[in-house]
Image (cartoon, rainbow, N blue to C red; front, top):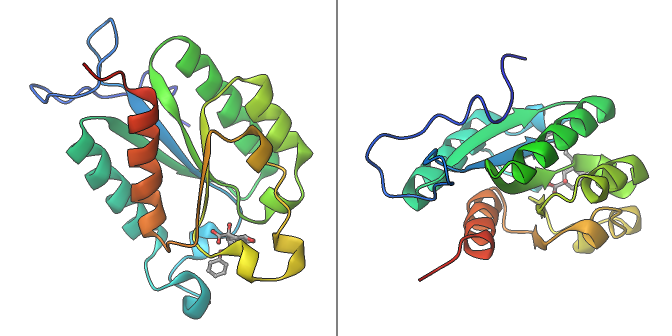
Length: 176
Ligand code: CA2
């Protein structure tokens, strides 16, 4: 891991966008949890054919269109995700981060620790699922994250990442 979320918020020169008091471009963090590195490689009937790299390109393009910066990370490890959430909370409190778009994968349905991390960090978090979890197995209907989410995007395929980023920007950006 090189640098913190804030250090890597590279401002885009000249672009009209969402800037903080120090004029740096504000950032959105996109976190993907366990097994999402397999996107596009297995189970295309459930999750589609886009790879994680394709998703990250979509996120970068969406962020550029909206005048914000984005950083995408993926981990298969719950503790790593918790550490990144804590870091994101600190960056949001420092005015450098708009919030988090979070596909926690199967941890959604099991992890009180991730929910506690989001709540404890006072982080603005959009919960995202590529598939419509409510049309799938009953164990996917429960989410520990929904109760600490500012919004939820479910079942739009990987387009949901663009929708979630736009929703987060609209929710957190003051308009004249
Ligand atoms: O629909 C989603 O985005 C999910 O968060 C994906 C999780 C699943 O456990 C949740 O219930 C819903 C699974 C991520 C695993 O992704 C794979 C992608 C391709 C091949 C295998 C797994």
